Image (cartoon, rainbow, N blue to C red; front, side, top):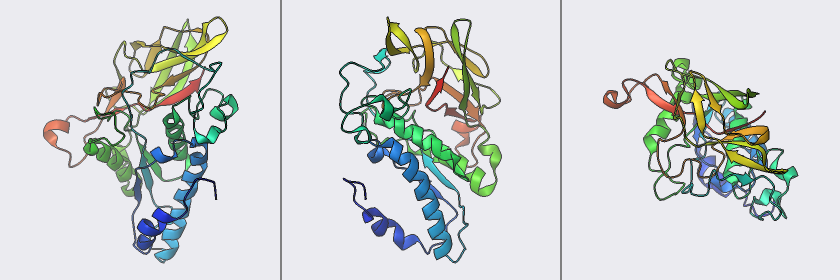
Length: 306
């Protein structure tokens, strides 16, 4: 067993007693305690999903589907965001030692990934969100992006449970009950290209109104040479937007990659203020006076090479 871990306490106390109960699926909301080791989570989380499925199927005498639906809430924004988007040096000469236990005894590019996709210095949550999105490769899974539901205190425990529940319900209704139209709108970055001195990011999974972007909003960063040979993630506000793409014009020399909302506290303490949204069909049962015309869903964090 890996050092520093406690085996089976929560499993035996809170899950084992339910294994003979027939279920239709699982909604999972966890991850912050694993943020120090996102690479391990990228293996252990999918393995846990398949293990739960096998056990529930066997112990309910096959009454629970072998590949029952499994969904989760991606980690929220946690913190004030005051130090974000400040042209952070990619590999500082004296890096901090707090990039996560998974990189102990010292931070290294090999551990963090080519573009620090597994967690930038002091930002383990970014790698955990990356691992959560990667887990969508497992069949019959869904994810609710909730990074735009922070609380003013900066706590990870946001009080905005209703939008989280609605976003999880969309995936559950689609995967478990065949209501695919309720999850057809699920914004995702589909590509990034360097064209005419600007970066253009394409977005898919959009609603009828297309992409809704706040021009000038921060949230994007481009990796390149900011000062001589020194690489940094240069903050690049949205300079233009179309129905399915955004453009970034403020670029470093020799741009290599682009990332979006790649901080623990990516949107600060302002709820429902992510830079990019799209509108989905109303969810059945949601208050018509507020959501009768649809519901805004945010584009989640991503990192793409150029």
